[in-house]
Image (cartoon, rainbow, N blue to C red):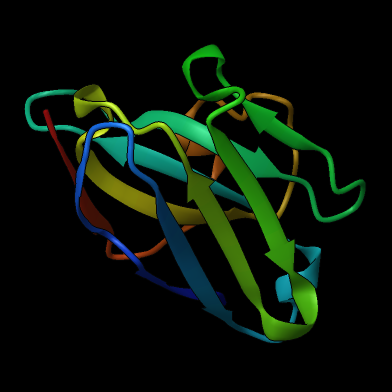
Length: 125
């Protein structure tokens, strides 16, 4: 079992930055692939970024590349999402997530096993 708790959300003006953190508890955190999804009102949950525990390779979708950076600190059981150059369309609830297996379909929320409660990010124009 892995428990995930996010923090760091808030309100920021367009062009600003936020850093989200996710603290994981569980004996085998270091062997879980970690990710972030987001969900805006009336929209489906959307992949943001992920990082594999075995290779450390990060994955992003195009709108986030160059703006968002995912990182993990295994000794501290944390994964972070640094978000720069934020836009109003980045407004959403951001969820930390963990997957025991990497099947390649990382864009699909069903590929991840555990979820945090979410943290709200609001970007004002």
